[in-house]
Image (cartoon, rainbow, N blue to C red):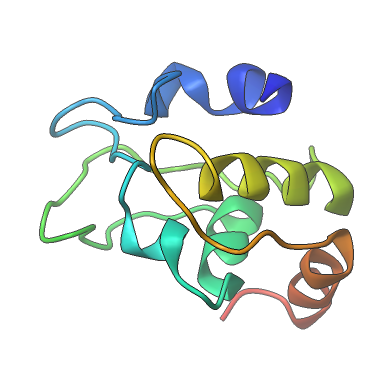
Length: 106
């Protein structure tokens, strides 16, 4: 929760609802709640720009955090997002993040 607050909440808000038309919500997001966490991990590591999210185009690019966060820190953020705001998705490990990082962006 602390890493989320310092790294993500300024855009996605502390309650995970984002900002309409500017930053997407994480609460209820199918990528965040998917059984397979790979895409979620990739977005946090490598960022995202120009891809509609649930049919909405967001003008602001999400930066990648691969250079700022360790595998354990990325896992902590992913797990916070997957288990907060009504989201109920399986948690992940730092080893899963390391594997996605090793493969690079898709």
